[in-house]
Length: 219
Ligand SMILES: NC(=O)c1ccc[n+]([C@@H]2O[C@H](COP(=O)([O-])OP(=O)(O)OC[C@H]3O[C@@H](n4cnc5c(N)ncnc54)[C@H](OP(=O)(O)O)[C@@H]3O)[C@@H](O)[C@H]2O)c1
Image (cartoon, rainbow, N blue to C red; front, side, top):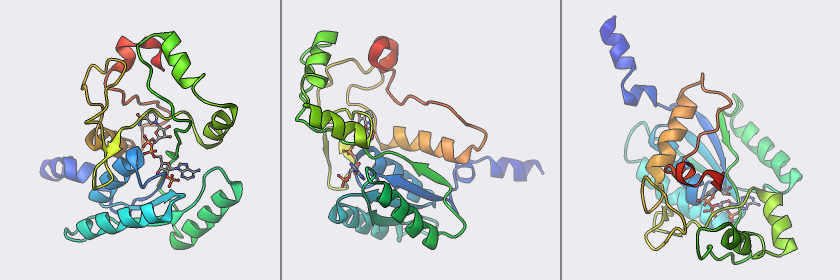
């Protein structure tokens, strides 16, 4: 009995997402792709949405080809859709509902935009942040941003797998854990814990490398 218990508590067993169906808005890039790649690595089937069909299709092709080489991996499914449109939310829900009659296990409302050519603050002062993030955007950009999501931070570039890279980014504030910011492993580990553990509910989990500890007003 103890052996069976121990076997059920291995990391592979705890985080086996076979049978999990996930939907990730904005899942073709950045943090959404970090989530999507972690989930398929552990057996989930993941619908990724976004406005650019070509981006979704390229990512789906690359990751599904890689996943198909190992039994037990999940798959990505690309679905174009715009989260700012109510009609699109209904259309996507209908489309996914037809393909997944047993329902969806988890939804990540991740899609977001950073527009207006915002330049990072020149120094870590309230005045510099106000100049960049408030004065730096027009009313139209401000409205569009909040029609989509909360403000996005400059995320850096992405590599050939579409994963975000912070190699050339200088953060204008201190990130205690890591000067280069978080990775797919940091985002993926949190996602696995939240999906696998059905007793965690209503929590806000900060994946900020301890930034809040040194910049208490950053949240
Ligand atoms: N990166 C950070 O440091 C950071 C920090 C705090 C919060 N966040 C939040 O985390 C989320 C992801 O950020 P990220 O850095 O990964 O950004 P990202 O790489 O720019 O990804 C954003 C994704 O959202 C999609 N999207 C944008 N507008 C959409 C719309 N109207 N309908 C459907 N999809 C849309 C984009 O695809 P299309 O352009 O093809 O539509 C893209 O795939 C955002 O909500 C952001 O606010 C990020």
